[in-house]
Length: 310
Image (cartoon, rainbow, N blue to C red; front, side):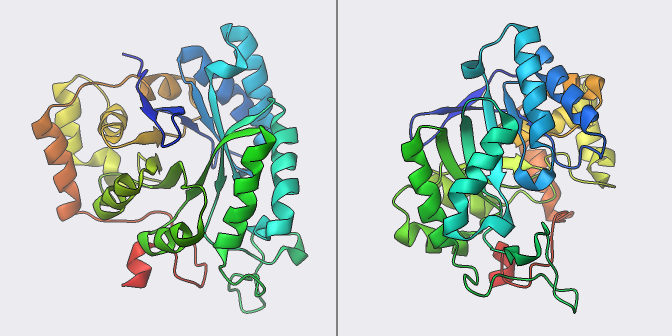
């Protein structure tokens, strides 16, 4: 059945449990446009993008045309985009937000996130500026002072053009730092989550602070062996469903998920979830005891993930 589950955020707003992820959707922008339209047509009510994905304009076009074709209103869906690392200076946040809003051209943004807890040097104009030695060119003036960026994001709520603000890729140590000065507790923390990386401690911490967790790469990433996992295959067979559907079904027992696809058939199947038993959920939980892997690990040069602080 098409998943219509939602979660209530710490401010009372609601986020759909399954979103279409659009990261790495290919260089042909028409492909992501068609994917967004296909997603809205089959029941998705949450679309996730980011300035760094380079596809906000086509995602926005897909949303506008998709809403018309599906007979939906703007308020029927939830749209997320993210502040790029090169726009981490507080003074640059308002323009970065307005630029994203203009590219999307959908009236307002439901969730605006700080994409990473870092700020890269914006002088080069590149999304991922590098130093001559190949390391990431961190903005020395800020040097990871993401609290200042968050303060600028909090002010965006007063504009009425964004409903919620959140963070992505924030570990427990960085969340603790942020919460010491934050006037607004992040509504969402979007992080890599799947059976190889369940991040149980991070989920429990976020729950204790009222922060909803959203999972990117819920099916793993490129060349992931999750789709060949024997435990997942057994459970999928028991429900006459795919491993990808099983992963999404497990994921929404923990938070919202953002499976990415540009294939219309897979887009449709990914949102058709099943009810897993407690035993099946536990079996999937146990996969990380013998198989652990983080697929997304850019070399930022400063501590980002929980294990970086150990």
